[in-house]
Amino acid sequence: MSEVLTAPLVVEFPFTRSLGPVLSAFLTGLRERTVLGVRAGDGRVVVPPTEYDPVTAEELRELVEVGSSGTVTTWAWNPSPRRGQPLATPFAWVLVRLDGADTALLHALDAPGPDAVRTGMRVRVRWAAERTGAITDIACFEPDDGPAGDARPTGHSGEFADPVTTLTAPARLDYTYAPGRAQSRYLHALAGHRTVGERCPSCHKVYVPPRGACPTCGVATGTQVEVGPRGTVTTFCIVNIKAKNLDIEVPYVYAHIALDGADLALHARIGGIPYDQVRMGLRVEPVWTEDGRFPDHYRPTGEPDADYDSYKELI
Image (cartoon, rainbow, N blue to C red):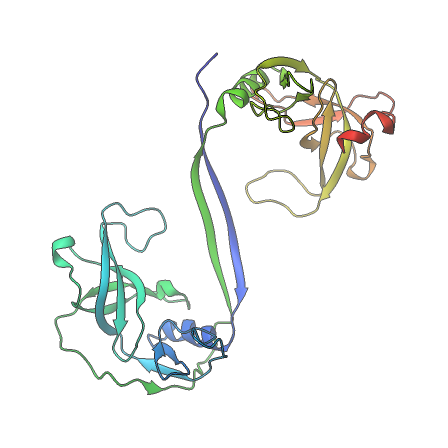
């Protein structure tokens, strides 16, 4: 058998939330080159501001303006910046207590090297050239040779023209997936237009895709069994929302399909039939595209629908 397969995968989606009055004022303030904090019940100024008191959980609304310079309270050097981080060159992650604040803000410090960073050093905000009302409006911090400024925060109404009311942040996870020996065998077989599962030596069920062990008995499943290629739709859903980077027109159908000879249903797209004609019990077969390593979709075979009792245990 060929070596175990690996593949780079990315899970990404935009996370959107509405902003209350506190965070709306904070992000709008950054757009206007103003840093706001909130006064907690014990008198401390919290930056970034929180909507609720970190000690008492009471709602907080008293906004104050703090300085754009501050003091590094602790730091860590980042020699290899990753995608989406504030700077493309090595930098320091720093916690900065801005003048007038009692808590520290996490951000990046642009410094030539770790020897140029120390706890207690003075830094100032470097504002982004284009600001939209996000934490990235602070491009980073940079060393500040000036003296400490006025440490007294001043009250602020939190009112700005055209306030930011929602925040959309991309959530992304890059990772390398290794399917393991059992699934590698399964994927290699698919490339040859074959579907193989593995049989449990204890309960004798055939699992597709195989996982290398029986999920019921917990024993290794080393015996390969070719199944299908035809199968039966056990249940399905109609997809009405178009996925990013997926060139399939909506609506379309994804279904659980019990391949002939398998004791576990796999999921795949149904094509070659109007979406509103897909049904439980529909008999289907795989369709490969040219040079495809796995079935592009399943289509009806033209056979009579399978009897419910023949697949009810696989729903």
